[in-house]
Length: 412
Length: 212
Image (cartoon, rainbow over all chains, first blue to last red; front, side, top):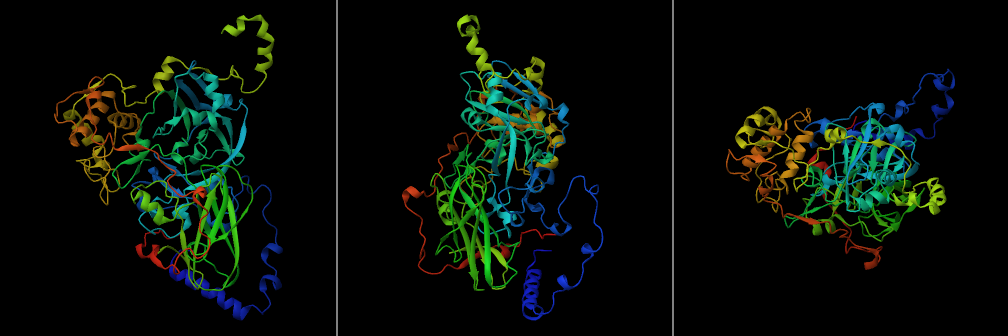
């Protein structure tokens, strides 16, 4: 399937024809025996590690080649429009790395803790698995998610506008245990995780956050971390921007000052209209997006009962409420949140309505447990200008046309 | 540890050791050796902590840059294709299309040393000697008019003299800067005077990749 307008229109027309001419004929899907009802399928030895149905080949990560100079230092996007619930499958979690995916032999991986500690320590992966473990569900959002939309509607698909987010269950060890093992000195105020890949990624994290809810994780969604997510070990920094969740974690230094490294000065600082830039902008603000319908997931069933679905999240707590508008933000209805509500995790919301077939301007507006309300694009731009790149949590608008085709637009 | 010398509290300590997260720890991991720490502890801070012995000049750096850096960053730091621009962009931070370079944006020269050493050249990280890194950093600062003398020696001793033009260009995070329920419930009915219209569409730009 392609995303072109021509194909989407053809698809919509085909659905209409089915509804009017074929619907009363006997359905060959029922009256004729398909092969799978007659012949034997694969045995249990055919797929030692299972993969999705071949009919789900469209549920894949995609990249935007013009965004970056080289795919080795680039990003791809989670296909949010193909997903349900709050958990992202491991193979569909977006990737962002700076020097490619390191392929690390876990028996040769070490984690060092040094700096302002009583005892600089080295841990093997086996050592780390001997600490008490915890399981926690958290979203991870790149600070640049929706960053291409500051100046206006640009990319046509929630995969591209909002797909630098995923949410999985992490299994790991509270970072606090490791730091206590090394003995943090009283003058320590910061930690600096560092990756073992060829970019040796570093970020400065306040010690208070490290001792609060950070983890070192070795598993996601019940299995070992995927290589592109930091196998064998990554740091989990709940609610804070994804760049800080250093993958292939090999070292944590403890210090009394931040390091002001490249990824917290040249990058991941937010330039305002004044010419000054905010730095250390760690928390991800409350945000939501409608994933269905959306440009890659048009309405193909025609008018009638319609299920609108989306995701919402906040780095400051849980999502308390999501409002949905079908008229561009003029009138709002509170959506139904279904499924678990974990702090700093994705939430799934639904709004079911009877579509009369007329054009729609769909929006969603999330409110988190701290009371923060997701802002409009105009409100955010009025405060920050258009050059922040990062932390664009504004309300997204999808334009649904009569035929069910959907486009990324701005309204005014 | 003095508490071990107190016979009266020994029993309490033993009980506490069996409790998770007790401050005495789990006895896991082993001490890192000095050589191991030296091998991995490569980070540099703005106050100069971590800078090694060594030195380099812009003139020396020019030749290394031409061989190691220019293929991506351009002969004059102008950036090839979409690789980062390293030079210029002064006084553009309030303009419509700001150009954020080492000269126009980076607040600390130590960041350049740290990053070049840990991650460059792209695909051959940590292959440059300390002298080569000093020389490349000196040349980058020279191209940005931050060091004026092409024979100026950049070293651990002279590093603190470097003044970055945008050192005062950063402010702390003052978010959240958006509406809160404490200011009142968001509007639910008739929130605009007239029905809203589409004023911008993604399809006009046509930059979305075609899906397969």
